[in-house]
Length: 235
Image 1 (cartoon, one colour):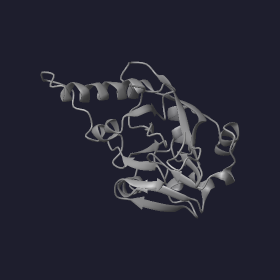
Image 2: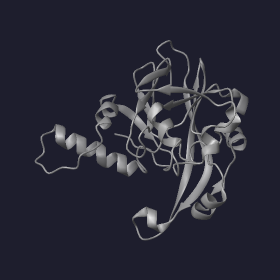
Image 3: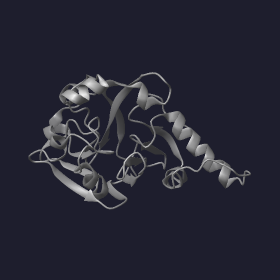
Image 4: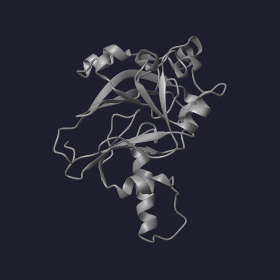
C-alpha cells in the first residue's frame, strides 16, 4: 500500500491464538473454534496495532478454553517488537481484544468514549485490562483520522463503541480492518448484499444492515478483514 505522499504502508495479521465458543453462544447447536486476530499497520508516522490479544481469568478460561499466543510472542511472529508499537486501537474492549493493553502502558490507546463507559460497567470485560496502570486513552466521539490516510470509524452493534480501522492507499484503494463488526466474512457479505439490494430497489421485505455499512461500502473497500475469521471479504 502507499499513502498519498507515496510512502509505503502495509498491513500484517497478528495471530493471538484461538478459543472455543460454547454451543449456547454459536446458534448452531455445537461449539466453534474461533481465531483471535489482530493487525499491524506499518505507516511512515508509526506502527499501529489493532487489538492486543486475550486476557486471562479462571472463569474466562473455563468458559472459552483459549489457546493463547501472548502479545510479545505474537508480535515477534509478525516481525515486530513491543517497543515498535506507537499507537493502539481496540475495536472494542472485551477480554479477547484488549488482553495485552497493560503491556503497552504509555502508548496511546484509541477507543470510543461509549466503549470505555461500557467497559467500566460490571460484567462487561476484565476490569484490570481496561484501567491498568499507565494506560493512556485517546477517547473519541465518532470518526477520526489517527494517522494520515488511516481513519477510525464507529461500527457499533456488537458493543456500543465498536470501531473499525480504514486504511486508504495513495492510489485510492481502501482496506478495512473491521474487528468484530461481524463474526465472519460471510456475515459481512450478507449485510453488504442487503444494502446493495435496497439501493437497487429490490422489493421488500429485505434484511436491514447496520446504518454504518453504508459509510464503509461507499469507500469501496478492496478487502475487509476480521478479528475472528481468517476469511477476507472482497467485492
